[in-house]
Length: 162
Image (cartoon, rainbow, N blue to C red):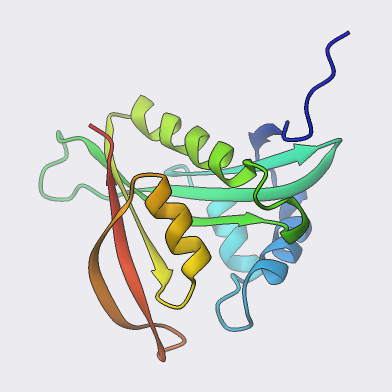
C-alpha cells in the first residue's frame, strides 16, 4: 500500500456547497477590507470563464485558488490571458507546496485554453506573497497606487507562459 507523503493534497473544482468554507479560509488569510465577500466568491463559482479549485487533505479543505479568463475584446482569435484572483492556503498548511500545486493546476487549465500569460495583483507590503509569485516566474510590471482599500499600493505582476 502506498501512503502519500505529508505534502499530498487532492484537488477538485469548487462547488457551491464549499462557499462557507472558502469564505472562512479567505477571512483567515487576508485582513478585513481585502477579504472577498461570500457574494464575490459565489460569483467566481458560477462564472463559466473562471475556475476555482480546492485543495483537500484527508477530506478537509486546506486552501483554494481562483483564476479567470480576461476578455479579449479587440482580438478574440488571440491567445487567452488569465487573471489570478487569489490563492488562499490556511496558515498551518503553508510552505508545504499547496499553493504551488493549486497554481500549477490553474496554469495547466489556462494553457488548455490557449492561455499565454497570467497577471495578478499583490499588496506591496505582502513580502511573502511577492517572493512566492517571483519564485513561480512572475515579474513586476507596474505599481498600482491605492489598489487595496484605496490606501495600499499593489504590484501588478505577470507570468508569460509561452
